[in-house]
Structure formats: structure tokens, C-alpha cells
Length: 326
Image (cartoon, one colour):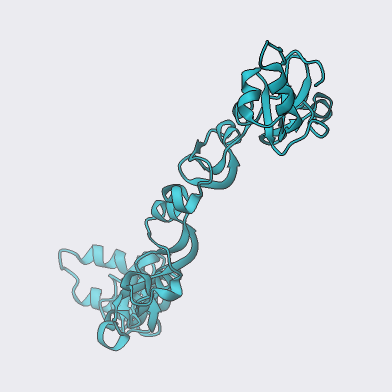
């Protein structure tokens, strides 16, 4: 038996230890002295404050100076049975001879699991420390977003708006837009009334009525929607074209347009009249109503001379002389 700081031969037991060493079945390291001796039983290794390296190990293959090495790249990792030189070359921290990742290196091992960011975005396979740096909540080793944080998963699906449906809309965005969120595709929601386009009659410019138009499309194209299931025959009476007539303007001009156009032009609308027959200028001096201020109107004034308004009527004929009232 070779000399060792772990061996203290006392009277009566030295021979027994030498005999046991001859039948050694495992390596025992003295971390202080950096020496190794083979023992048949881990209990004998413990008696001499050694570290048992495992059944069947041999001192020829055991490095009593090796230990745990803590490294960090994107996560903390711990490596057992690493020499100080190897740990240094890896850019790690050597935790001492015979140290282990389970004991001395427990602090430098990152748990990998689900990480929830801002309560609406979840990432799988994230180291715990990285999750902390991201300001997230870590759910534990081996956790997943779908199993352990379903409330944090960003949901994408269909959004219904009463008479239309859009795919690939995020849950919160759908609610902000006033829609109702569904996890299915729009094509699978044909039995959901508010997701299915509901057509009806649409009136365009009060002159044209079109059936089977979706409400949103009707309004977006400038039309007036008559309701879901409405038809032009049953509900579109108010969409008939406005009548055409003469429109007399203040300056005496005349145009043949519909009622609304005349109204917007500040004109006087004469329904079923044409400009050739409409009287757009009021002729107060047309005493002989023939549409022209001429000698016949003057004769009417002369015949009624002596009337209290005779002079006024004469002056009116003179002021409007030659005016065509048509």
C-alpha cells in the first residue's frame, strides 16, 4: 500500500486495510492532497474524508483534480468532470476539484421552458434567465405555452363584423375593431349569422336599385341599404328616379333637370314642364297674357286709363317693354 494522507495505520487495522486495498473495487479521491486510492467499499472512502468516484472506477482513469465548470452563452450550463484548464479554455468558471453540477453548480444551470411577455406573447424553449431579462414570466422547467400558458398565447383567427368576416386577425385587434373573435376560419362559420354576408336591396343615387348587395359594400359604394333580405321590387319604391322638369334660375336661365339638381341650384322646379313652355321670368306688365310685353299690353293700359294705378301700369309696361316671358 502506497503512502497517503488518507491512511493512518493504527495497531490492529493496518493489515486489514492493506488486505482490503488488494480487493479494491472503486476509486476514492482526497481532494486536499489530490491523491487517489482504490477501496472495495464507499464506506471506507468516507472514513478517510474522501470522495467516492463510483463503483468500478480506477485511479488510473480518474482525475481527482477535475470538477464542475459553469459556462454561459445564451444560457447557463454546467459541465461535470472538467479540469481547471479545460474550463478556462471554455471561458467558464471552475468550481473546484471534485465539485459537481448537482451541488456546487446548481446555481448556473438554466431551466428551459415557456416565457410569457406582456401577457399576450408566449415563447417556448426559453432559458429562465433570458426570460427574466426580457421582462417576462417564466413558467418552469419543461413547460410549454400551449399547455401551461394558454392565456398568454397570441390567438389568430376569424373576426366577424355583423355581416362580414375576415381571416387572420389577432384576438385583441378584432375586439378593438368592434368584431367578435372566432378561432375557426371564416369558411367554417357559415352557420354563424353575424359572420355571413347578408345581402339586400341597395339604392344608388336614388336612381338605380340593385338586389343582392352586401350591406357593407352598399354603404361603401355610396348607396343606401334597405335591409337584410330586402328587394328592389318590394322595398325599393323610394329609389325610383326623380321626375325631370324645367328649372328656372333667378337670372331667367332655364335647365331641364330632376328635382334634386334644381333644388341644389337654388332654382324653381316646374314638374312636367320644358324650358320651351315654362315661364321663368315673371312679367308683371303682361296685361294681355301672351308672354310678350308689347303694344297689346300698352293698349290695355290706355283702355283702363283713369284707374288709380294707370300711371304705375304705364311705367311698368315701359320698363318691361320687349321682354319675352317664356
